[in-house]
Length: 81
Image 1 (cartoon, rainbow, N blue to C red):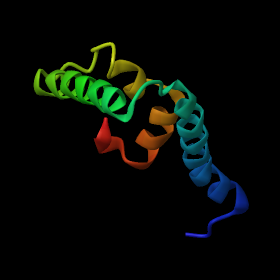
Image 2 (cartoon, rainbow, N blue to C red):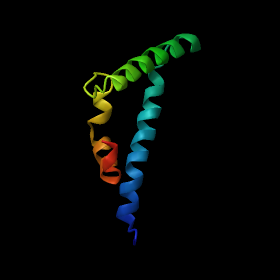
Image 3 (tube, rainbow, N blue to C red):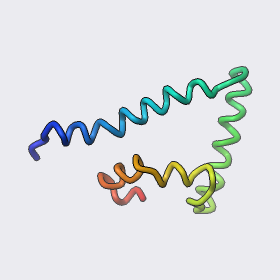
């Protein structure tokens, strides 16, 4: 396949957005390392429970599966949806 500049930008754009989102989320972490880890563990349990129940409509999961970045990723790996 002949990758044009626009193809390369289209592939990199989601990665750049993810990196920007990740950097912007760093300001949301307040508290001690232990309290931050406890919150991560709580969210992980909620995510795993939703996955075990096959519940893609869980308020924690839904926004991550239904957004423009997820739509773009699905075009590259349709079986991921």
